[in-house]
Length: 82
Image 1: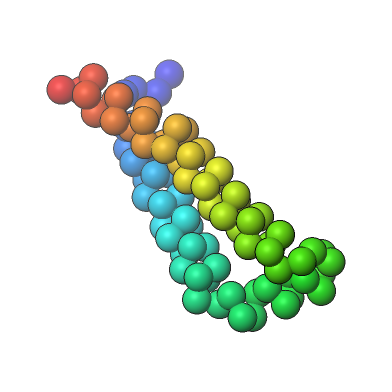
Image 2: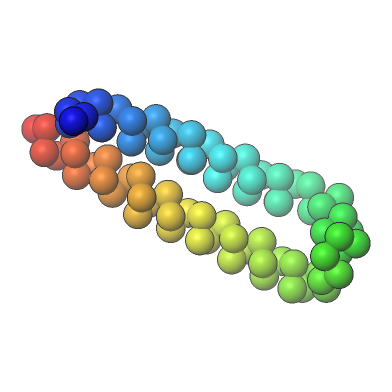
């Protein structure tokens, strides 16, 4: 069985990694838009307005998942530890 401090450390690192990925993907979507939109249009055959909505949807769902699955349990374990 894993102890609370190990689980807290695991969730802390998981949160850090996922937050870094979220920041990286957000930066790529915002700065490399002229490159990635035509690429995704050719690959997927989706219009630009639809792609922008899909990007925003992806980023918001990923952010919610990070908060629900990493941040909230990490905070709860930190509170439990005192």
